[in-house]
Image 1 (cartoon, rainbow, N blue to C red):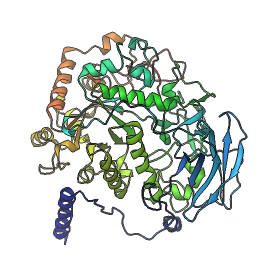
Image 2: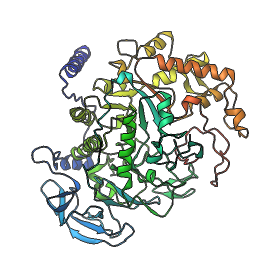
Image 3: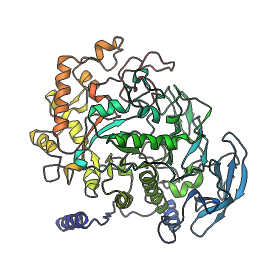
Image 4: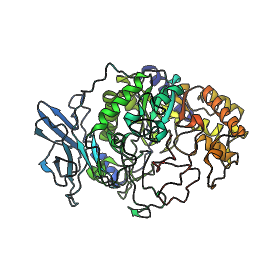
Length: 590
């Protein structure tokens, strides 16, 4: 029976590869449904199709025939109002009642083309008090204004779409096997004064020509693709240090910041902080009210395309911002999130709430977000955070719809989160980060998990597996992962963990884990021995079949040393950092 099942699976995979049809293999075990799961299953009958399909209904705000329309999907709500504001800082807005259709979509319209209008929704649910002060941000907002606190109140902005002057710009269409990806953070690349750019740490600064940092530097490296760390609008601020919220006590983040951006707040809006041109985030102030980020982001993409450099976005569709109020949690918790039998958030992501991607309208939102960034921003590809938390049907729908627009669109992911399955992504045409080559070549950790460059075999690695990595880590080889070499994203360093340079410094014992580094120049400059290992790693990486990825600063063996000149109470100042997600400072700046 097992042999027969295996044959059927591989026949299905072959058909999927030949005819390009969608393949859906359920990964759910048949266990009795809890009461909350039964309720969610009932809710799934409420559905409004994609707007370009028959009976589809456009969501969010948009202007049509002299009117501005507002629509929100929330099947559990008993009352929804539109709130409009002349300025984002207004606490009381004008209120307009919205009407519900048979599919759980609430809507209203106002006369006029109300571009630039600030708005939100008041959502009331049966059996719970309707809190007047909570303004819910439109999940389809194309731009948002944000009050910079850890609760992150937001106002959506009505944006004019389809009017940007692209000057003939199109997607970069490149064979995946030829991709050389530079994983980078928009602010990190130019915020340091040595970059020489006029508007440091911004979309504009990143593509300013004739400067030491930014686009000229990236172009001269010889990479042909940039992968932007999350640049959807996200929550910049976390809960206060030594304080608690919802059972979480912050004893880990003295900076109270989320610098990397893996706390998405708006899936259709660009991060406004990267248009601010400020040296540091301005707390308890409104930002993004001018919606400047919309055109700044497009200018950035167009500039990269002019240099032949493709743009991939790192996207987070497995959870949303954990601490803020006025988002999908208040709009419709029971519909949008995976919940346990007691109605509590499931958090396999480790971020407080996991989106119920298998729900039809969550799936639609994710697919529409991807298509919107492709059409409106000319994005060339996407890297999915914790991809295994996205259900297979949604994974297939994404690539199926996206390839109708651009057959060369790039989809790669972290093939873990709710399990580990690089092969499952590969049979569906996705690429995945190859952690096996990463751990096999450098090791799993620099203290007791050394890899090949140190003359060690980490885990079950051996000469045959090393040969397999060079060949693309293919399923036809022993313990391979991928159907094709171009599905393997070969890398030795990413934003996560130690930089490769620091891994080598620590792995050789030249720097101790808890060492306070006072002479940066002495410790950071590679010794001859360190340089040999770094070159050996680079040789292996750049000669292995598949997609090649390096992380910002890997090209010069950067070190992430936490600076002393920060006011925060960080007991690790002066040490090498292995998790710099919270540091908008020189730890991360290039």
